[in-house]
Amino acid sequence: MADGLLREGFLPTAAYEAVLSGRKTLVIGRKGAGKSAICMRLTTDGEHAGDTVLLTPDDAAGDEIRRFELQGLTGRSSKSLIWRYVFAVHTARHVIAHATERHGRRHPASVRALRKFLRANGEESEAQLYDRLASGTRGLQTSLSLEAFGVKAALDMSGSSEGTRASVQLEVLEGGVARALKELDCADAHGPLLVLVDQLEQVWSNAPDSKDMVMGLLLAGKHVSGAYGRAVRCVLFLRADIYDVLEFTEGDKYRGDEVRIEWTPEHLRELALTRASVSLGRRLTPEELWQQLFPLSVAGVPTADYLFSRSLARPRDAIQFLNLCRDKAVERGHTRSISPDDVTGATRQFSEWKLQDLAREYLVNFPFLSRIFAIFQNTGYVVMKAALRSRFDEHREALHARFPEYSDTLTVDGVIDVLFAVNFLGVRRGSEVVYTGEAHVSVQPHETEFHIHPCFRPALNALSSTELHPYVPRQRDVFITGDQHVAGLAVRGSQVGATMGFPVGRDFVMVESLVDSCERIRRQLGRANLPSQTAFEISVQVGHVADDASQLLARMQQGEVRDAVSHVVAATNYLNTLATQLVENGMDRGTGVRSVVNRIQDETRALGRMLGGGHYG
Ligand SMILES: Nc1ncnc2c1ncn2[C@@H]1O[C@H](COP(=O)(O)OP(=O)(O)O)[C@@H](O)[C@H]1O
Ligand SMILES: [Mg+2]
Image (cartoon, rainbow, N blue to C red; front, side, top):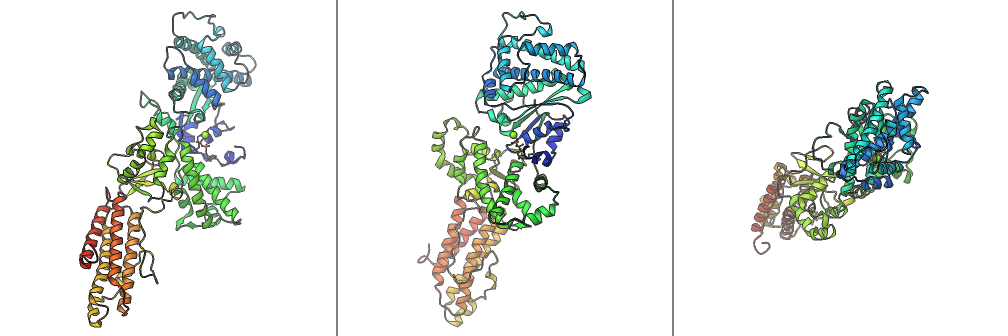
């Protein structure tokens, strides 16, 4: 808000509209999804037609709530009472200020009672949330002064539990607040008071009292609408990972209230345009942003697609990535526009940041994350469960020793669930790879193929889909790259070889067989059901083998003597290694790779037989 960027550059999202209209009161979103932005926006003048109170607990306040307990009540019920107390006091203060401001000097009796209550309980002045909690804690654990509401000094409650006493007192207070609200009857006239609670993540730990604190808040938030009707609405902003670890006994209690902040690439694109416009001080067109300021495309992909596919779908990440591109450009003296190189330069750095951020984001719930990331370093980005299992097994003991309290989670399936939940891994479903952003169905037992999110690949050096040793050509002079190999072009030498006398026909037959084998492997790849990127990468390597062999053929046809046998032996060995590697990466399970592996092995066996046991076997 400080730089005004958000004031002018705010994009009203579906979640925002849902809260503003009052349909939803529980906003769930990951870090950087825009919870605080919505919150800030609601407190901005002219947005919500009524007053707002923003509560953001700091460490001291968090400690106070976590420690608060009442004999005779569960942790979460106790905590809900302290939250209700805070809401009641804030509402009371609001009512008084509001009555003075809008309803003239003469306050109705109910409002005067509130003033009296606040004075008697030391809640009259402006105070930090912490102080409010501290006095509420004291009041609820001993007794509140309730004479203002016509209740005599000591409610006769001897013999009842601390919890019961606190509840009864609180009900008196809430009743008093409700009466004043009713008497002023301003719910319809000026819209409800919005009580916003944000940034609970600041005081979140994975301990039971921390969960109780949040559960208590949810209970209290729901209670507000019962206690004050439409005059007060409590809107809570919660980080998704926190909300998701709460254990509800009544499962769907909050479903109707909750809205999850979701961003599509289209929205992010719009956000980028808005933010860029605000920071340049004039309205940009999409063309200006995506064609003049940013390059039209990067690595063959339209720039916006390139950027938003390589970041998680949240505004903080998108803004960071865009800013980083700009910074790279400035660093390199590109002051008028950003070049594709600037963008690719930013990509790696951004990836490293995000990998660290992810570990930090989940430090409380999954402190082992950064150790798990190490398992994915220098691998292919397609990860099969079988391969993950064997890699994980190597680390299991160390992980269990280091994080004994997480040993239930630290299994292959447990880790996959976590990595999927935090958006590090996507899962292959049909022909698509699904990340949590889009899917709310967790990983199923039969699912075996996972992909590292593109955001994290550069940092992990996992840029190709599968780890394949590259084929090293033997005919080095000219080397045709890519998959446009020339196998089909070579003249069939075996028919002429014999008459030419030298090199011999048998050499031709062998090299041609190699080329034919490659061709069959590639056709098999075309038929197999495997990730297209993996098929492409295998195809490229097999293509290199074929090209290399074709060049050898071409030379042999010109009468050059070449060591055809050792060439074919080396190539056959390479193909065998390729098959082994696919199996080791677990690629043969659950995908169409098995048929490719079988094909490669059939071909190398046939080539081996032709070469004879002396050379190969
Ligand atoms: N609707 C929006 N319009 C414009 N910018 C937004 C919007 N939502 C979030 N942002 C920006 O994204 C960044 C992260 O948002 P923030 O509200 O801090 O996330 P959270 O509170 O969920 O962690 C901030 O820089 C914020 O300005
Ligand atoms: Mg926030």
